[in-house]
Each structure stands twice: as C-alpha cells, then as structure tokens.
Image (tube, rainbow, N blue to C red):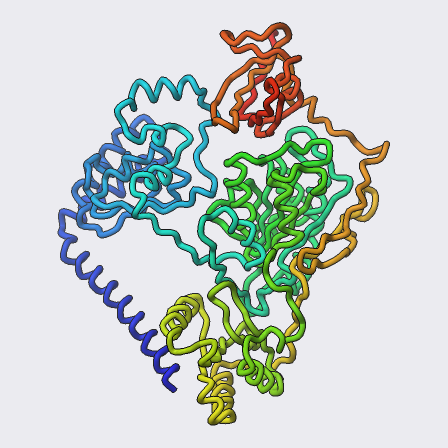
Length: 631
C-alpha cells in the first residue's frame, strides 16, 4: 500500500540523515583531533579534576590552566555543552569565538550570562517570559538607580540590563522580527494546559493524547479541605495531610501506580503555590509515611514553581495553602509566571487541594482563576457525549465507525485538539493505536491535502501511525477498504477489545473529611459537565474548637524593615514600620497609616491593597527584616 511505502521511505530518510550527520561528525573529529588537541583535552580534564569544588587554595590556578588548555582545543570540538556559570571560568574571553551559541532557559538568566552570548557569531535564545524569571527582590531601588545612571546611561536598552530583567526579555526587544513562537505543546493533556493558554498571545496546540493505559479520567481533581488553615510560615498542615493520604492511595493501587504497557511506575510531583515551606513539610511527611524506596520509585518531588520549571510528572498535586482568613490576592506578573509553571507540570492528572472557596476570593486573584479553571476547564468546547456516532463529523466517518465497532474494536472519534484532530482512533492492547483519517470532498478535499499531510507528519513525529481512505474509494468498494483497514490493524497488533470508556466530564470535585474523621475518606461529589458549578462546599467556617490562624505572630510587626513593590508603577521602596510620625527622609512608616496598618501581620510575597488618598493602590511585600534583639 502507498501509505505504508511512504512511512517506510520517511523512516529510511530520517535514519540516513542521522547516519550522515554522525559519520560526518566523526570524520571531522578524526581529522581535527591531532596529537596537540588530544593533549590539550587531557590537560583540560586534569585541571577540572584538580579544581574540585573550587574552594581550595590552588583553585584559581587550576581554573587558569583549564582556560589555557581549552584555548588549544575548543576549535577542534564541534559542540560544547555546559552551564552558563562555567563559561567564564572554562572558555577564553574572546568575542565571536564560536559559530553559534544557544542559551536555553534564557527567561531564567539575567545580565550575568551576557558574556556567554558574546562568544557567539550567531546566537539562539530560547525561553518563555511567561514562566519564572529573575527577581530583583533583594536589591533596593536606590542601588538599581545608581547602577543605571553610573554605568548604563548611554545604553539604548538599559532598563533590560538591570536586575529583574531576563536575557529573553532583552533578546525579544532587540530582535523583534526574529521571534519564533513554538505553538505545539507535547506535555499536558488539553484540559490541564488550557489554563496556561490564556497567558500567550497565540493559542497553543495540545498534541498529547495519552494511550488507554496512560490515560487517567478525569484529568482534573479538585479537593476542598473545609478545616484547612494557614499556619505560621506559609504552611497548611491539613492540606499536607490530605495530599499525603491521596498519594498513599495512589501508590497502593496497582492500576494507578504503574503503567504496565510502558513498564514503568507513575511519577508524582507536589507544588506549593505559596513559598516552599509547605513543600518541605509535605516532603517530610511523605518520607515518614511511604519510606525512601517508594519516594524514589515514583520519583516523588516536592517544591515551588521555580523548583519544577523544566520538569514534569505524570500526576501533580497543587497545595493552595490560603484559607478564608489568610487569602491575600496574588495578581502580580511574578505570580502569573509561577502559577503558569505550576499548572503545566502534570502530564495526565492535576490535583488541586485548597482550603478556600472561589466566592471568598477576589475575581482577579490567580487562586480564583485556578478554581474557575477546575470548574470549567474546557470553556467554549463542545460538551462530551457517550454517543460515538454523534461525535463524528460526516456520514463517511459514521459508516467506518459502525464497521469497526461491529468487529469489536475500541474506537474514539475526533481525538485531539484544534486543527490537529484525528477522525477516528482505534485502540488496542499494550498502548498500540492507529489513527484513521476519512478523506472526503466535503471535509478533506484536494485543496486541504497539503495541510492534512503537514498535520499528519507532525503527529507522526510524536508516535502516531495513520491509515487514510478517500470517500470515493470507500463508495466504490467499502468492503475492500475495510479489509485493508482490518489487515493494517492486524499487522499493528491491534485486536478487538470492546467499547471505550468515555468520561462525561473533565473534573472530579471532592470535599475532604474534617480533622478527627478519617483523613483519607473523601466524599465523591460530582464530575462537572460543561460550565455547571459543583455543589461541593457548604460554606461553613471553622468551629469554636478549631485552631486559629497564627500568621500575625510570625508576620510583620512594628520595628520591622519592609521592602515593597507598587504594582501599578513597579517602583520598589523600603520602609521601617514604626510608631510615631511619617518620616520619608529616614524611611519610617507609621503603623497607624493606611499602608502601615495593612502591613501588620503579613508575610513575604503577600499582596495587599490600601487607600492612598482616595486611590486604591496594590503593593507586593518583597522582603521583611526583623532587627536583632540586643543582649
């Protein structure tokens, strides 16, 4: 068949190209690796080994030896890969010494990595300014102003060379016509990644469609903890208990803990949405509950958004931490970046554990936006139905579907997202599946052939295999076409396996049992359909015997030094909270002022509003310092 021949030839072309690149690389290496170069490489490796941690008395001399050795051999090696901080100590300081320099994760890099880029005649800057970026939280505004006026006055892009700006921001402004956005998203299933799509100017195209063995339905779980309370330094012990109990159930269930078709265990991550203290608490509790072997088996990792940037897990738990009495808004750009990262780390399932309801939060608070996403993750999309034929786009697809189902095959119509939908997917055992495309004059006419083939090649790149049939061929010989399809399925090892299990909703909403009841007992409330709001929360507050929030004991108090950023003009200021009169010259802010009274009891990274002469202003607490007690 022509389709099989095309797939075979495509595979041969790819392998031939890979072999050509490999052979040419080794040929050039063999030609350039003279005795002098080999000796320089050995000297370089020896100097690095002697450098060790870089703290010894001879570390500086060994670094110098490494740079000198590198100068004699780096031109002979086609590619060097190293962290940016190693560039200055290992590579000679020559402008344009490499043909191409690629800076990955540039949105996390600042001006300190600029010397690495200067070593390239051409540069490729890869990053995402919607994810966690450098912060200038611990540098006072006055110091930044002195830096700008003293050293950067004549620089056209001086504001992007200051602390808090990334190399990606600088490159995007300097080369606006060279920006290329990679729209295809391969990590998360569509209901998970839809939250992050609102942060980008162009829609992302979710390409991940898990196999029957990988799939977890529903992909979203929302657990409300009615007696969860934020305590001390950004911790919520009840949320931690619920997460540990949920993970215990997951690792104890063979059908959830392991993907047999891929011969591997599911991986698990826990992300704290406020600071990292909650993640540290959960990590300690997991080690006590599960033991080190299970933690390693499932590659369980706990941390904040910055910790997880660049990582992924099969299942991710989010701890919101906030409670009805401690729910400061999070709207600043840096919080958008953190929430974007946290909400896009899960491949197959994302679990939200929260102690606050949406109606207790401000509408523009990112926490409220997360809850709304879990309520209606596929806003604007057609509601799912269990009627397979109703999901088909044409009578041609319905006819093929009936014949496949009649043979006992598991078939899913209209699989995928946006412009990358597949007409029919036939699933078999061990994760095997076949994409069936029904090309007709109405839906897939000749004018769309080039687009269809481009889309098919992209999907084949992520593992899909296709079978295509024209409606004209099917009309003339339907039995012959279906015989070819059945033979293709047999060759692929896809056997009849019964009807697919279709999930009618995307989110399962639960309410955790209160403390004193069995923590692992969760009330299964509802799976959402469309935009219907879940009835999972009774609105009750903590009872008389519940523990109160003790944030004020560890929060800001009189005498503390506070670094703030005004979110309307991005200006950073430093105050000492004190009794008495306002004193701008000495940076004293009275505790009875509108801003001072709002600062009492808050913690770092809290966001507050205050009345500034009839104008509501919003500030972010960047840093707090408490004077040491005099002995």
